[in-house]
Length: 111
Image (tube, rainbow, N blue to C red):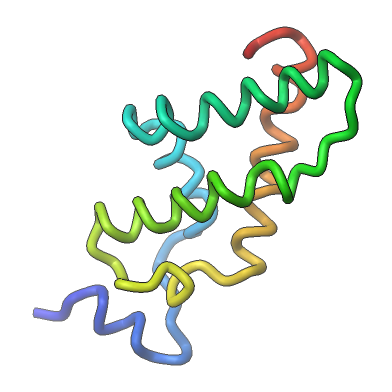
């Protein structure tokens, strides 16, 4: 039997699914993470949007995404260090994905 952590120690590490999509699903569907991190971040973005302030999505989402990476890796026992699984490009892709999916709902008063 091989643990997934053994794969993460290789330089050519790649999971058999889209890690960015999976992390995003986790962030929205894990009740504790959603309640403590995701929802408050979206409310903050909604307030900035409502007040017509500039939004730096990378700055606003990075703490939430860092927390999500740690929580995800811990919950699924993937790797001790989330940077072994989530590259900087993965994190940037997640910022773009969340922003593009949530901003229209925010503009319509969803949060």
